[in-house]
Image (cartoon, rainbow, N blue to C red; front, side, top):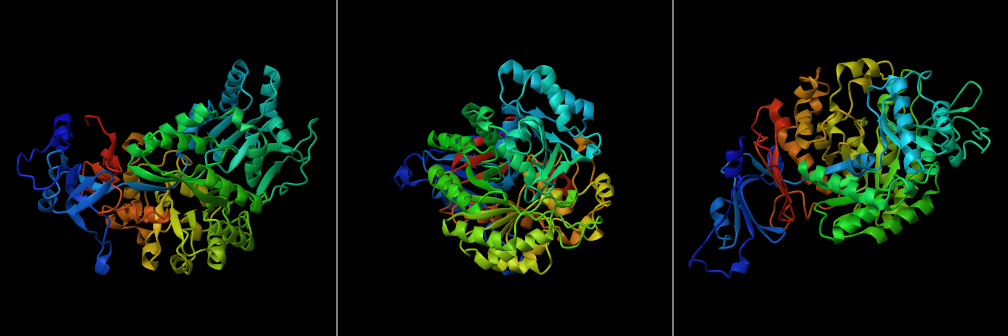
Length: 601
């Protein structure tokens, strides 16, 4: 689309009804938009896979007052009504919901001068980045070093960097500060000796205090042949050392947090997300992100809805932690900030063998469960009684079953307890998800698997898990509500834009010419693919349902807040492989334009 056509389609006009208005001007809408309107209402009416389409919407202040025909809209247009007419080009869609992502954290990594690893480093390059970060820390008086993004599969157990390697760098530079480096998935970390001393794994003389690799519940501490910790740890052992090993208030200042929130919001609005569940509210064990969001909301600059989680680890006292989460809710709830969610890690990831599964992996293990069913039921009961919802990381089918059992036993039917990622589900559990009003924020973008990964995963995964993961259509067949999550930035290279995700959901394929990738094949689980209408429902009204705001947002309907997008093509009719190329031209939040695409192409 060239600039002239783009400006023509979105030309903003003032309509002058000189002398012919019968109403007081204050009774008319403030904005009217004409075009192909996907309402996300009346989906599946009479079993038909479609939703109600309209031609116009009218907004007064922050809400829709009319949705219907062009002719009907004219009755709500007065002398001061602003008009946008797309002339039938493109589409008007409800604002999207990100069911689980880490956008603040993803943007914070740059702002806090963290080490940014990639998926290609050699051990020497890895340590070179650590060295440079240590030099910077010494020159700038930094008290801790954090890194993110290294890829476990690049290294063998022997050549993977260890605490001793990090210690050598620190000793050479004459500094003694904690270093913690998390992997791309966020489930494994490497710490230096100072970090492990602070966390209580070593004494000040460097002697090991680790009683065994399973000392931290729900995690593994790697030990060398002499029983000494190497610095590598996974799952809950990683979160333990991450939280206890360094003072993050020295790393994340209020300025860093505020910049990260602003950048995260810009990124979300550019991609059409007006609602998000933030999966790492208290990741760094402080209140920085909550305070930054509250400050933006108070200043009128928060143009999106944020559901914030409080993470509780299996090595903690969950009763006191639920109380702390409740205090966060009371302290930080504002109009657009809802810190009413408790994040639980049920397990790790199936692809790396730490997801909790029913059928054993090829090495005979079944993954790492972090909780028992009774504990999750107890947490759910306590949390729901305080108006807090559970938001659980559940990958394997055993972890999913455990969550459903707990929610069914003690969960409130009026609070949207949820599972995210949800790689594997037993067939009989879909109906239980539906009957217990459990929301599932599914990793749709992971429905594809490239050939190289299949070869790698086949060493560990039985065929049942190798070729069947991330179900979608089964939720619809069971009457369960499925939303979607990108988990950004946990998986580098996957599309986090909603139309790339939509293309995967409807085709099982994804193409990215910039990466030289043209249609990942083969298509797995073709019976689980969604229709275009279903995928739009997942992105819009289903996502709002997950967050309990479906009566206010998620569809285009009179009385709801006017959160909507204008895009440059009709995603119900375009070629399947071009869905990912759909551009968002404008994003509106509560009737106000909060993003505009100014590019020429």
